[in-house]
Every structure is written in C-alpha cells, then in structure tokens.
Length: 126
Image 1 (tube, rainbow, N blue to C red):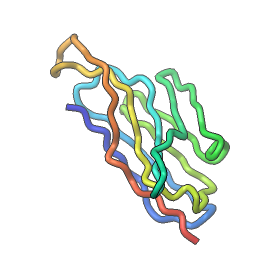
Image 2 (tube, rainbow, N blue to C red):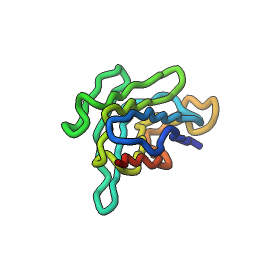
Image 3 (cartoon, helix red, strand yellow):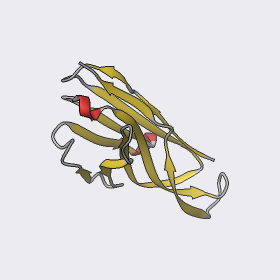
C-alpha cells in the first residue's frame, strides 16, 4: 500500500560526496517526520538525521556539519546530502517515514504507521 524507495548509494573515496533519495508512494495522506538510519556490520541500526514536516532538522554528532537532510513535500521525498565522507560512514542506509495513510485510495479515514525503505549500501574506501 505504501512504499519507500531509496536510491543513490554506491562506492566513494574518503572526502567524496553522495546524495541519497527516498521517495514515498501509495495512499499517503500526509508525512510527518522522516529520518535516515544506518547500520554497519555488527552494529545496531542508528538514527543520525531527522526532519519534521515543517523542516526542522536534527543530526547525530558523528555527521553534523557533513550531512544535510532535506525534503520535498510535493514529491513525498527525503534527501540526504553526504559530504566529506569517511570510511566509518560505510553502512547500509535506510530511510524511515512516519505517515498518515488512507485506508484506501480516496478514503478520508486514515491510520498512522511507520515505514522503512529497502536500504542502500554506502561504502567509503581508501
């Protein structure tokens, strides 16, 4: 009913940049907060960047000043611009969205739920 599709991961050298996108589709009534998580091998998934529906942002100290989260509400899409990448940024990156979803297309009745993208690999190698 609702899908979050990520794109933009890949291989990059230290100091390089990547831009991730996450587009939400389906019977979406509205999108509340959106966030980016990452999970490195052997580690738990961690939230490192979040953005509210009004555009307020918050970052983990590990990415502050290097990563920028943004969103295009008209496109139901959240972005992550990653600059000055380091080997320790290597992980699978996941987007997450807190949504109000219509029970069916055109319905005025909605429910609240939490959705995840499929994940995209980011590898920073030297």
